[in-house]
Length: 234
Image 1 (cartoon, rainbow, N blue to C red):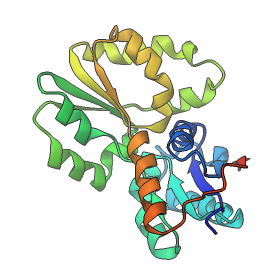
Image 2 (image 1 turned 120 degrees about the vertical axis):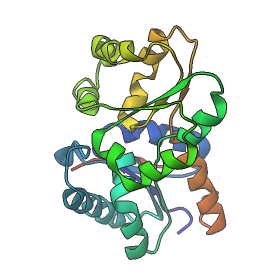
Image 3 (image 1 turned 180 degrees about the horizontal axis):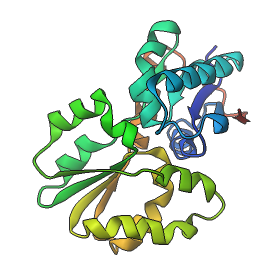
């Protein structure tokens, strides 16, 4: 069982950024990445629809014999991870916008949080904001940015204009939180817009390190070295 793969899923390519971090943090582990392209995007679906898609993803990964699952999506985490932990006897790791570290690191200016509209409405996110808001958080839901990233998977530079158009309204922030895994692919554009003078945060590293901790606690770390990396699209 210790050599079984770890499952990572998202509604599309966004979770690949999380997968990359997991590969770096856990170099001996095998992985299966599932892209739910037919369910893309999660950000404009109802809770019931997302729960069904998340359940389908986990059942598919379970068929691959995974020993743990990373829900590499803020929306899927908010909506479905609690029920998954009740249904399945395996570790689950979710994503959340990196509001806490951003607020701690940014002591002078505002913190811009970019995320999907549905993620912004979730109770879990509102609780996160309430707990850490220092009066300088700017919550900026983006209607179709994740879809644009999905459409331009081969050329993220094509999204320079729409990305810059979004950021022009927030020229004077000190930090930016990329609160959707799809947005992480736009990090070079965000850095370019601000000329490298701001701090940028995402939840990927925290999720990968939480995964490592859970595997260690459950005695499920692989010691044989990575042998497989599989991709599934449904």
